[in-house]
Length: 205
Image (cartoon, rainbow, N blue to C red; front, side):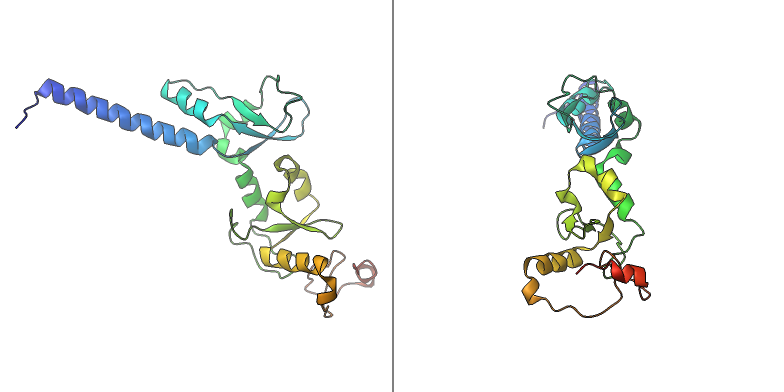
């Protein structure tokens, strides 16, 4: 039986603790910065989609450095030489900068414009929610460039995945669709009450 002296046991315990702490910090840093993020570009004042160099962030965390750097930006390569001053926004609150956070917050407490089904949660990989544009076209939110989402959210309506698929089928196979009368608004969205004469006159064909 191998016997380990108390000093050696303390040394190995210290090493194990250091490794565990390093792993915990690495996982935390990776989780904080691994997603695509939205920031307001200091140069233009407009939204930009960026991505933090997560491997560098993990390395700096292990070395006790609190610095970040980008490896992707929607303004690159034209402005690849910028000072990356937007990193201050991410360092202050990385979670709120995530595209996923912006999307979740926007759909929260909203209902599908067609079926009125509430959005209890947003699915990332399967059945993602969609959007209805002012010109009556639908698209999944993840089909839109992330930096365009804040602008899109101001004028588009939310629709669920099922209604999006139904409308896509309608647009691709109009000869197979039979419309039934119902309360629809100017963007063909569902209305709780009968639309006014003005809304009826602008209803899409």
